[in-house]
Every structure is written in C-alpha cells, then in structure tokens.
Length: 169
Image (cartoon, rainbow, N blue to C red):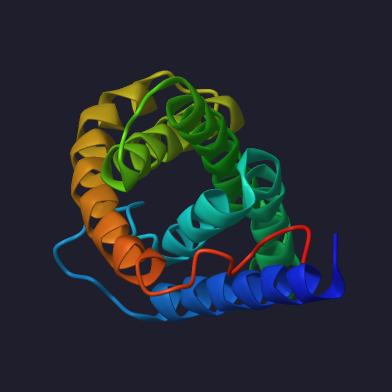
C-alpha cells in the first residue's frame, strides 16, 4: 500500500472518529435510546467503495478501538459497539459481494445489522433475553438512519475522483 493510500485511509479514519465524537455530543430528541444517526458509518461506506471489503472491515474495527482508547474506555459501551460493528461489517460485506445492492441497500443492511449486533452484545453482557424485544425498534431506526447515511455518502462518492483511493498509486 502506498504512502498516499495510507494517508487517505488515516484521513478518513480521523474524519470518522471526529464525526463519531461530534454525534455523541448532539442530543437527537426523535431517536430511540441506543440509536444514533451513524455518520461515521458513511465514511466507512466510502472506504468500502474505494478500497474494498478487507480495508472496510479493518476500518470499522479500528474506529471502535480508537474511540474506546480516546474517550469511552473499554466498558460495556465498547463491547456493545464492537458487537454492532462486527455484525454490521459481516452483513455489509456479504451484501456488497453477493448482491447488486446500491449504496442505499448496503447502508440499510449494515445499519440493521449494527442494531442486531448491539442487541446480541447487550443480551450477553446483561444476561437477558428480553433485549431482543427491542430489535423491532432498532430495525426501524436502522432503516431510517441507513437511508440518511447512504444519501450523505453517495453525495461524497460521486464527487470524489474514481482513482481517489487507488491502492497501486
């Protein structure tokens, strides 16, 4: 991987961390507890589009670990976030590889997968099965936020040059 590509990857990772932090500071009154818009995931979609699935997987996991190191610590919020990003990443990669889904379909599936991963993590951490009742709420939230994030990511994708993140330049 070239220095230029590493620099762009680091820039996108820093942007995702900043968006993650800023988003955590802004109260959104119409969102359900545990739901966020997920603007950092839009940056992840750009990484998926330009760099591929392997770099996308590393991007999400690295973002969660760096966010924990920088401000949230490695408590239950970290494990819930890690559970969400792992399931979301698997779902997103599978959808992007095995279907002809647009950025909207990929984003919505990833957002819903993130909710499922969070519920799995909460169920394990707190040893309660009743959290699964919240899946409907997080699925609806994931549908809405996935569409919004995909819209924002698609605005950026069409504006970047096609060779923006080429690995061999």
